[in-house]
Length: 112
Length: 117
Image 1 (cartoon, each protein chain N blue to C red):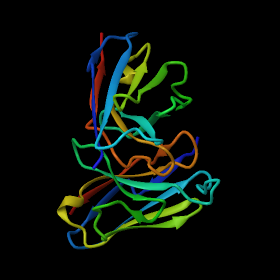
Image 2 (cartoon, rainbow over the protein chains, first blue to last red):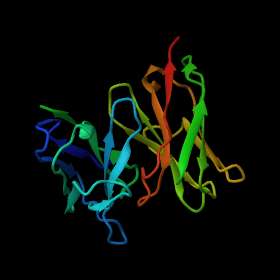
Image 3 (cartoon, chains in turn brown, cyan):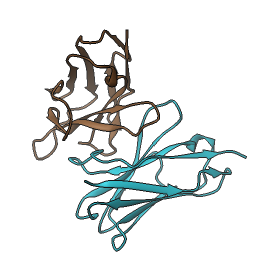
Image 4 (spheres, rainbow over the protein chains, first blue to last red):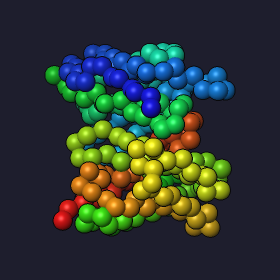
């Protein structure tokens, strides 16, 4: 199975500042068709996860452009600019290139 | 706007069978894959398996032998059965869209399933 490793696991951020989360996969996430299926999710307490980013850098509908994804191969990054109070919660990277799909451990973002 | 609504028993005894169903509203099952994911309380997420409209399935090897998924295209429903549950199966179970590209695009509201004697 593909192991997804996130860092940091805890991320205190000041409102209005930027935050960055790294995600590393144990194998390349390039699919047979050349696409890379690396996704980012946000989960607030008591809620279902919400997908923010798919295919490394494509934002889902309704996701603010403060959220951006980048990376390739085995190294990926989620960046949040101008952090707002509603951004608190746990962020997960997830690969859907290799079966079974697998998630990172999660990064808890909190406001300082 | 696609919405997923799920239901099923929330309290089981060890060795019983977990059974959950998810309905897809605002769209059909189409040719997409549909998945089940679980999250033990306070922990991370685990992909259980997925199924498409033909009934073709892929299961997480960690659960193979205990998990079965089925689909009812006439009702736009898909279901999960997990046999011989133990306390380790206690989790919030989510249905979600699957497939490489659609993975996690839509989620159900989640069902807490507790296993206790």
